[in-house]
Length: 334
Image (tube, rainbow, N blue to C red):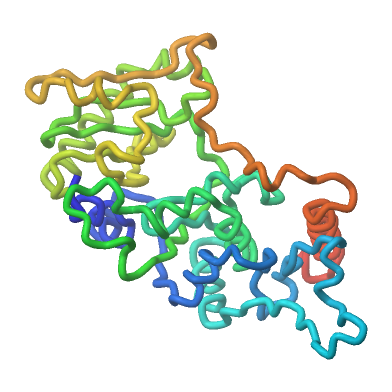
């Protein structure tokens, strides 16, 4: 794998070229101060101060055991300053405008990855975000984004960079009616489509058994017509979604191998696929016994303590109170 192949899979690189066959996305370059905020794990978990109080979540996950952080030790002569929450007003304004532009809700991702491992922390249990604070919470809580921030080029044979020079936040229009069974990962080797896998492999969907042949034909046509001669890499993967009216929408590109999950394949199998002829291997979960448990990212161990009085217990209580307050406010029904 080469650095240039990894770079082509960054959403800010491919989206402008393929936007007509993808889902609506608005992209913002992130200031380095926000990138450093995402990387910083040296202090308490702070959320940015919002310029809109209505959008704000509690900005600190506060543990009562840390109360000493806010007190001056008697006779010490030193004043202990509380941690100051960060603020990114310019970025917040741009993001707010983008959210309104695409219909009021988005799901976020960085150059390559979305914070899927932190969906559990949102009030909806999904990546749906309607405010800057919700986006910051998902990004700041995600372990998987460490790949984008620190390890994107680790598998490159010609590695010269530890990270890309710039990071971008892609805000993708949220569609509440998307069906997870209609998302597929497709594997391209030598510019030939050699494999397609059901994307959500932890569930059996009977409808896929009925529509397998039709879906295979739709995805093959989409690849040949829209991607094969347009995307510059020879080996790569791409994710698609098939709509109810049988349109294929491009969701993402990923490099071949390394950190990209092969799902119902193994990389060894894919490497051995013939590159010539009509040899597409289309795989779905064909029975309840064939599901693949364990591929979903679990809640990080550090976040498991939600016992009464813990920091996360207090945070969740505060978040619930804030949600109830906004629901009761006159503006909520506007």
